[in-house]
Image (tube, rainbow, N blue to C red; front, side):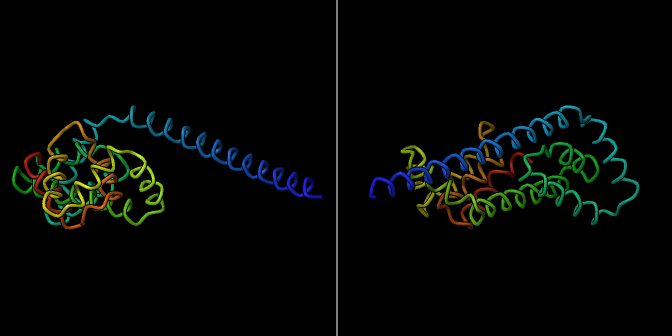
Length: 196
């Protein structure tokens, strides 16, 4: 009787594991297909042509205030989607000059970083990311470093200055870590200012 009950339990566990494995495989295949389609579409985009069209449109048809708002919003939305914002930054500088264009780019990039941070901090993947951080000695030490109030903004700022760290990926990573929102915002703004 006990053997029958344990074999039923084992059988249900195997079925459950098989369902989970099938679901993971399907989700992975779908993600790979979507990534392929997105990469292929991004490869075919003529960014130079679109940047020139954007500059013409902003100069001709849009007021300065509305144009700055549109560029900052597009930059903020493109950042968490891992899309390049270079044409938007070039367009802002070409249309509005160095100072206003830099300000628009800085505001948009900072807003995009905050969206990434909030998505990682309050999104469904936070528990998974926290488990990965706690399982890695290197990530655990980084998490402890940015949770310290004295140096967190500096670490965020240095990551923004280095071209080796992908911008959106760092924003998502800091959202998963224990860095405070104020340190993240201050470090991001200070680190982005020289590059915009």
